Image (tube, rainbow, N blue to C red; front, top):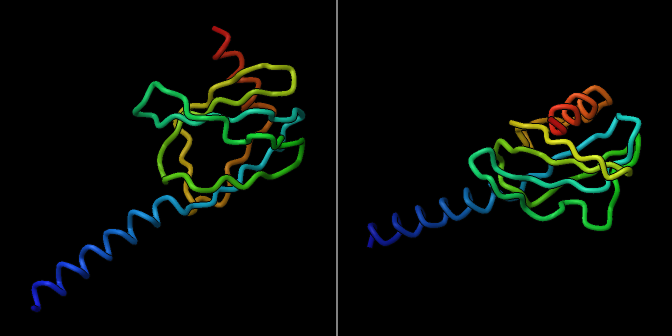
Length: 117
């Protein structure tokens, strides 16, 4: 009987850990001069892009978007601005432990130049 309770407790704890890893909410702050119209994530271990995380939302100049429901991980992030310019920022850690991920003009200009090459 004690073994059953131990196994049940272990299953519940692992379920909470797994569920908790998807409950992170990350603030993405846009301090750049451009609006961000699309934001795609790909684990750094993958070559495939996920869906547009913004949907119908736009992260305007000086606005913050709260991204939720993603596991804590290191991601490559593809951003698309109002002009359709794409830029890929590699190795971004997104997790609730991080205060916020801030996008600034230098980030966008640097990664756009690197993405265009």
